[in-house]
Image 1: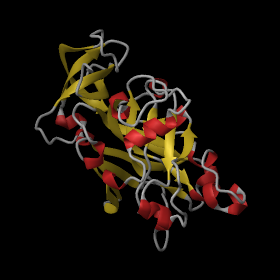
Image 2: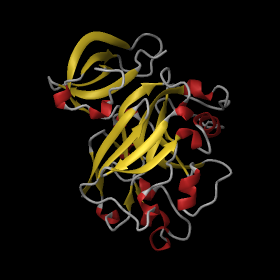
Image 3: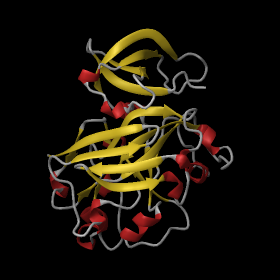
Amino acid sequence: MLAWKRLIRFVATDGRILRGEPILPSPDFDLGETTKETRLKAKVISGRDSYDTTGATKVTDEVVTVKELLGPLAQEDVPILRCVGLNYAKHIKEAGRSPPPFPFIFFKPVTCVADHNADVVVPKICQDDQADYEGELCFVLGRDAKDVSEVDALSYIAAYTCGNDISSRKLQRDPEFAGRIPQWGFSKGFDTFAPLGPCLVSSELISDPSKLHLKTIVDGDIRQEESVADLLFGCAYLISYLSSGTTLQKGSVIMTGTPGGVGAGMNPPKFLVPGTKMEVQISKIGTLKNTVKFA
């Protein structure tokens, strides 16, 4: 069992960057709403391994005040991000694709990882009406997994969080930029293109991820809203499939896919511009918030 139920990474009022177990002011408090003014308290977590189950990592009695909430994972905490494309029926339809017989997998470099409340910086190469959002449920593995059965798969999940798979649609799909076959690596792999947060929630608190509800809000407008139960390939199947002959390293993040409602699928399309405010909200986890900036 993990030492913590919820984990946040933050700047304390004394300037230290810490990990801690938040002391919620109310049971339904959304950690994504944390600001300097909320004066959220947290118990400092000691130990180098956030996913330790031996007792070496502890929630201490030291209580500090949160000045600034960061993302729960720094880039050095994540060995790799495995991402699933075309995993909700509505998104498959708006993309003009057919349901895949097996999970469609691509990877993001760890340099994509960005904090809660950090700017998503769109580089010059994709500032021409193509940058897009994709709200997603993500999970983190608490131990190495290889050749895992679907029955045992959920026991490998340490925690869940919200993610935003920022994407560049021309570089992904337009034959003039991507070639005849859509490509997903370069178009989704720019720095800051995978914000995560606002916290990690232990799998002890989320026994069945299919009961979660996802919502993406862009500039106050609800763009995506779907039950995680609508995933074509659920969390357990993804772990079992991805671990076939492959070691999924402890700390790996798996982004499970996005529902319908992305900007590219709207009529007319609505792409990200400087100042766009994005919120990815998942029940029992909270709200990941980021703002768009052009480099």
